[in-house]
Length: 268
Length: 327
Image (cartoon, rainbow over all chains, first blue to last red):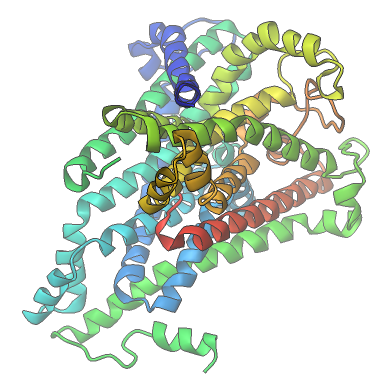
């Protein structure tokens, strides 16, 4: 039995290693300055890069954070500090439902809400869908971290005459800040890799982003487009793009682990 | 007082509470602000339901129940039915679970019972990193590395040894239902493994000790004392993985071949609820086509919600609210 279980464990981590290996092998050579700074060239020409997709992803993530972080963190504060048990149960239940909504369904909803009234795809719509997806993730993570702050901190602060809202903001949230940042970063890493909701909100764009009301390129979208294309040069760049995206996502995930390690040191 | 009244009274800031500290306005304003932010959850749920229904209404009016059962998806003639996609979704998810569940549970057992301590944390980190890989990257890798390998080495083997079964008949061109099932398995393994691990860890040590005391071998202890005890929780972990598999879009779209198909061979290309939306939405010209895709989204949402609710119910009744599925 031991052998079987060990083999299964090896089989389970093999895909990660293989993905990393193949992405590096096929994509590393294509990562150069041009990749980060240039626009895609016309079909048939070699060279060019995915600069617009990288900037686009960055813009979308900033938008998503602007929407997701305030709503998520403040909502988490409500769940942890103010809400009665019955209320918080329902809100938590709702957040779990939202977390289970497939990302492509989010895309459909924001298409109907933003793209249709605006008569066009836009970076705004892309940022909105990613931000809304972040809200339940950040809310749950914030609530959990705030629960870990010892009640004594709150009581001491209130006993000193500090008003409740100040106590929460300056004592409780500040104590939990590292955990909240962790939650936000993890949520950002999740939405950074999302392609499906962007298919009909941000839509993609071969030029530099100029305007939030225009369609915008994004790294996962561009990878998807190029991967399917029949052109060798585009596929080569797609490998490079995939490597960059994977490194970004893994980097965030690993840094989050490092940030939380010294604090919580849980047994495996 | 009924539940609604209780909730409203309790949720109203300042109701029946003594205010400590000077800033009464600040306190109430902040409390209302956070309450609004938290209740945005309900607004979002309502929005999702509302927009999907609104978008799907023309198709619902035209097709009614037939949308779920009639079996033809033909955008050219304006005949739409989600049946091929429901079929594709169920079959790919079933294949994914068939492949993933034994591997995941064995790995979870390995991690909780058998692995040396120094190996556990790195393995856990690896598995959680696997969960973090974006779907489009797995789809890309799957398309260009995994599928050709399967097509050349594994599928002919399956066809020659198991070809008498209707599942393995027919030629494939690489992207097919089975390929999509395999990549889905890779995607749900981390979830099932990590939740199973939590479940197995929460089995009380006394169970194992009692089994050992009765003279059980190591495998018997694991099988009888741990696995049987944890059955319901493990089932919940599997259902959670199923929920993830149902909503998965990009990797499946890139590996499934994108042809509406109902039949027994897993070597044929297919289509799932999520992949048809991803493929056809931006190219849908007629209002009916778009509306039919919204209805597909509605079906997908309904199925995913039910499955996720079932999973959570199982997990909560087994282990209490302490077992948190990692989203």
